[in-house]
Image (cartoon, rainbow, N blue to C red; front, side):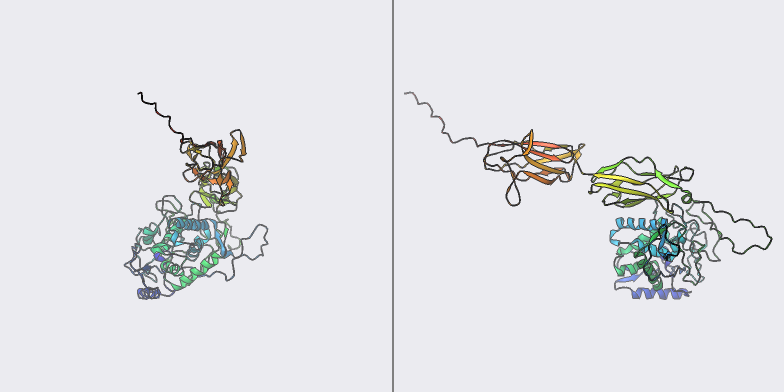
Length: 578
């Protein structure tokens, strides 16, 4: 179970005294300088612990979790079209599309906000597997909210911790006691400080897989833990639930998912069958269900919003002979299920100069079989090909939700330094629906104007050195043109671009004469300073031509002339009259 309420004790523990002994044992097993707070969370000595509304009760939930272990062998790849049904495929490696997207999105956000944590998305998947069977096999809507509530038993002290209501029943429907809530199983009192808005709808909802995954990520990344370190990884998992069995189970799934996973449609994931309290999971439920003493109130997906009641499985008992049968009610298709195809929605030409943002955004429409737009479905955009282009924020994958007309707009593309063409594929999250592939082009950096940064004449005596270096500034549409490739050549004349064989020259690394320089690049300020120029013994006026990508050209005049003769004696002054 998530944070804090996920701290279950070994199966069979039923008293507060046993809970206290388990927490004490956890503290004793940790590294020197690490202690456990009142709720069993590992904290470095002197470190500030996360706020914890239940720190005084000593109970940590003890709610059951799934104990099924992954197969011992390496996960099989996803089945492809045409694969025989008899081909063995490990369904445990299939993660529902929206749930998988939420894990990866949360890990990407943590990589940006807390890069030192090194949170792998597979750890969120492992905890999600153990806590709720991946949100009950992926029973979530396009927003990521579970279609039926996932609740742990009420924490009334009867075989579980005693945690009286802290949320007025807003999340768990129980105004007497708290229960673990949602796909990552947070109790309301922990959610109050650990909750996050992961899907950008302005609400922090523990029933939403995007919100819960981001919250779990932040919970695992507190206390300065680096999850690439085995010791910190152990502390983080134990802080989620201080049970050695829980630690071992999560680690097993973490390593299994690291070896390979594949995406399956929402609602088709495999739900585990065994729980730590001895009960059996059910493929017809969506995760934990309330205990008999829990209230049977309708699920509320977000505070203040109407929710959906848990689906009732159809009866498997045949009716008596001769009894009229009534067909079971059909379940209305979800928005995702009603999508027939994806098509482009007026996306313009996708082109940008290296290092720039694309001005045009990708726009895709989800339509049903009648050609009507489908709202509130999620579309994933994936950058393909040999490119360093990304979406805003540095990610290769982005998701967007369709609006009321069925149109989703991807985040802006950001060009890297690699020029050429790449592709962006649009796919529907939750079902296999063919989507459009967009072509985007990155062109080299260019300049349209070159100017010298000084206006002093460039002169030199035969066999000497030019006193001033040539420096130019490149701009493009009046903005600095940085990292623009340039070439400098000493040419025969303004009308003859052939390389000159006399006059001024540069020197290469070996001191040899060169009159063409290639591989030059403007700096971040658009400036380019050329190497020292020298002159041979030929006098005259010469032209240095500088060209850049994009066609900008600048001719610089160089003069080689003998020094003025200042050695002549002054004329004698007239004789004085006698």
